[in-house]
Length: 245
Image 1 (cartoon, rainbow, N blue to C red):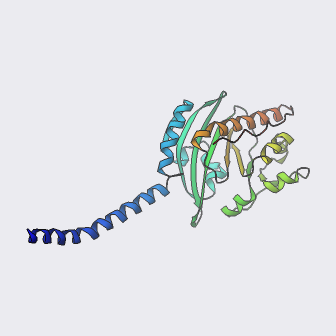
Image 2: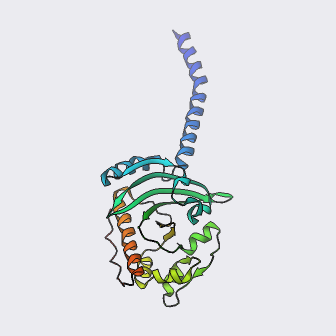
Image 3: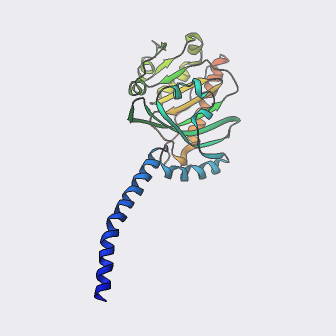
């Protein structure tokens, strides 16, 4: 009996280190997989029911090249290792929209990670092509502004954002005081238009699954402001929605 226990003890001594090594490797693999998914594995378990609550479709992940006009988007042509996850799609107030989590890193520097939730909307009317980014976003990405457009009458806006685009006159027409105020009230806001799509996200912000409607509604608000600007109607932006837990 004593000999049997001793033999088992010797076997445990042999198995123990291998078991620990296995645990370490499994943990490493989990961290590697989790780190490659925007927001981590646990976020998908929250986003899927959030999509169901909206009555929208849900896709766990997709190549970033499947996003409309991906090849010409500032969002994708700068940076490396682009990953898309938690794609939900549907209609909000008559506007076809999608929302997805996006993660990428600065070229040649995988330590500089960018992650955010993007709303893309098809407004049904044409907008001039432009890119709006906070200066810090471009700096961290290592990208210099191209064709920046400033508004001397709105120094706060011009200090908060870099607005870029080739057709400055057309872009100025849609950036009415109401649109400028809308942006000023949302520090870190990033916008982009291409091929009749509007892309909106907040620098470094993953939208809380329980509050996705706020991001969708503010996108529709901005679309209404742009539509009014194109029609020559001057609107005032509504107040910020209340903060929800």
